Image 1 (cartoon, rainbow, N blue to C red):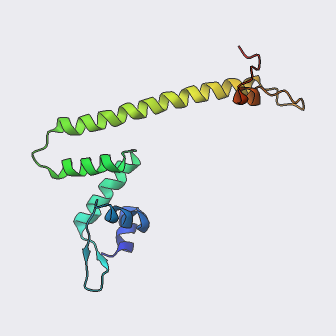
Image 2: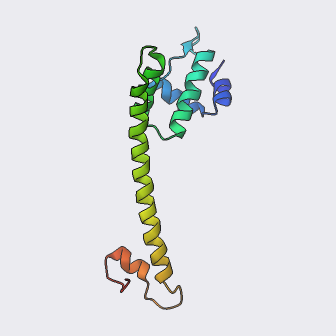
Image 3: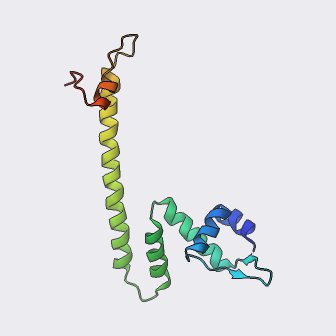
Length: 133
């Protein structure tokens, strides 16, 4: 398979596939003319990487997950630990986003949104007390 075929089948852009090759996550064969030649195992790795990245794992996490995937003597506890660490980070981001949502909701509700120049949103962003409780 060429890079276009693998891109279509994996759902990953060719640029991403080339990047994964550059950083050593995949190693497609090269034909005599230098073109990449992908086999089914490469497609499987790309699908694996695409799914892991869609779940928010970093490139380094993906590297560790791939190593664990290929290590038949791995302990599932190692995989679970990596996933749990990532889940903890996601939960912290969700908490931060919820706080941002709550603050912005309060600011929007406090803003009259009329022709007056007084705006609690701008006051809050500037650090000036807007009289909100």
